[in-house]
Length: 450
Ligand SMILES: Cc1ncc(COP(=O)(O)O)c(C=O)c1O
Image 1 (tube, rainbow, N blue to C red):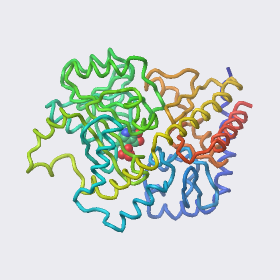
Image 2: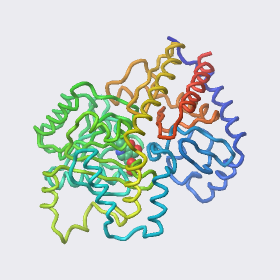
Image 3: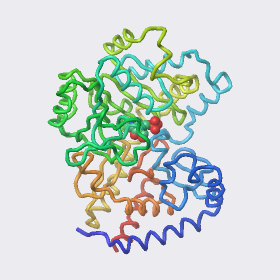
Image 4: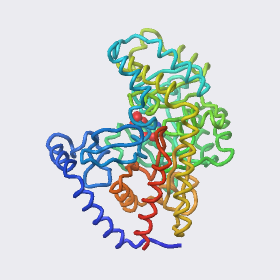
């Protein structure tokens, strides 16, 4: 097995930064102008994480491709970090949303589309009742609030290195058995150890210990961890997670926001999971803001019994535009015409091709890395074997190397998400797009290892 020469990495990085800047005079000028009115020159803080000296400014995006203001056309495997897993501006969504825009964007009254969407979510995920938000973050926050309300318990439990959006309770980490606020937790209202227990993914004993005091309202979990990198559950993990939650009277909330990549009904449908509540957002609106949370008959009854009519517009859950007309129309069109069974089958085949391509390069050059895949999402990791939990995955992180690979790819017209080594396929991705990534990855590895 070979290792990385850090000096070589630094000089390659410097070369790629120069090329990036030289190739993008328009983006550079826009970025310099933006610094006069936008904090850090970007509309949202995390955009500073793009690997170049500044983010490329987008001109337009269609299907699996994105054009920047300097005329570079990228194959987009980032796809809005799942927000555009439908492909950019999918025709069915654009057409339905366009019509709804001229018929009323927000009305404070339900549309028939909302009923259709509730019925379709029932069919896909198996849960009978649904509510809507504008983001998956809100859907998680509201689910947690409702879980506290109906169980009367104060705490939640999450898995180490999880990410569920900007939900205060989840920015906690576990290091050598001690919980502490996760680095980057900006202005927390309270120390998250007051609100949250945290255990390692796949650690059923730790989970049982965490639930034993019977003060945990809910477990909030991705069925497969995706945000620290893909970490798969071990066989039997989900069965035991379900049983332990039930044994201790804790509700199980499954967050499918990213794991919808597993199939049309996410991992819940693929593996027959049985959550009390389920959250999803991002891609189901084809790019129009929407989040949703569903729950069982029993939870629905407990919620209804605990919220008097007069209080239904008051505390902790809500949002003026939550469930608004445009988002309901967008979800209907996206689930009908874009995120179909056929599209998932095709996208998954492409992710298999992507995985095999990258695996071939890794094995051929004896690089100590590996690739994981979940449905139409695939990712390479800087460690030889799949991690068991978030801590193992986080320990193998290598920001310098990751930045180099992303920049190298961007300079050769490939976009990877700035937060992972992750590639998503959309219905418009082609085999040629996938193969282009494989070639670029091969040449990056060759340059890196000499
Ligand atoms: C698993 C998961 N849940 C929820 C969210 C929050 O989504 P949003 O930022 O759209 O609110 C994210 C965001 O990346 C996520 O990865």
